[in-house]
Length: 323
Image 1 (cartoon, rainbow, N blue to C red):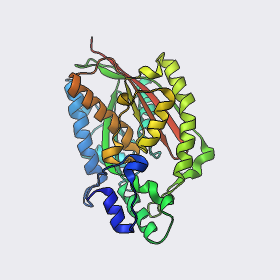
Image 2 (cartoon, rainbow, N blue to C red; image 1 turned 120 degrees about the horizontal axis):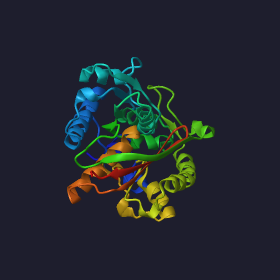
Image 3 (cartoon, rainbow, N blue to C red; image 1 turned 45 degrees about the vertical axis):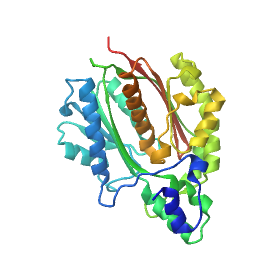
């Protein structure tokens, strides 16, 4: 049963998710699947892809594990510790960075900085989100008579997991994605626009105002990133935006003249997977590119995310071909 029919069956109201935010399907995990189960599958793919591109890479080379999801296995210890345990890593540090939908973006900044100092060499970033938990609470609140509009954004949340490995530069088969430049800002005056007080309380969000403000903050930040990279925004090969609203993404793209063919979406078939969305969409875009052209070839890539706080983060990646 599609997500819209599930909602309509439970609350008796037709919500056109495709028209409102572009969602046609959302993936949910079963109740017996844990965050670690989800994450380990993503890690297996990340290790396989890394090994394919860097044949000398071994699991034991990982010396830093960062978990980045809003969803947590327990309050304590850090969820990263459970991945450390499952992978049987020795001599590796593990900790969490959780910051709404920007968890993976923030972890990329942190990992890049720590690797640049020489403190670590190979960081594993992993995130698992079970957003359906928030969606279920939103449905219960709506059934109790609360405003559908207040809880609608939680109904767009899906479940998913993603993992990536960030390393110091090393020889590769098909080249590497280089962290070229990034910018990250927080606008604390909007902190109350999206709040989850605890795991038992439905998400409270003013989605329209949050989107409107995020769209105001993006342009100058994207212009700065493009300037620092000496890029022309219209010529960016892959634009990977946070997957909260396809319509909002399309509106933002028009302001910059970004070609729709260069914008990648996963919200249509997966919903909004919070911190998982950006890196998952990047992975899908790269897989599609490789399937079509057999390899990457110097692509310029923008990751653009936002999250409650209000936080906005933009990272520029560039594929460096193997010489």
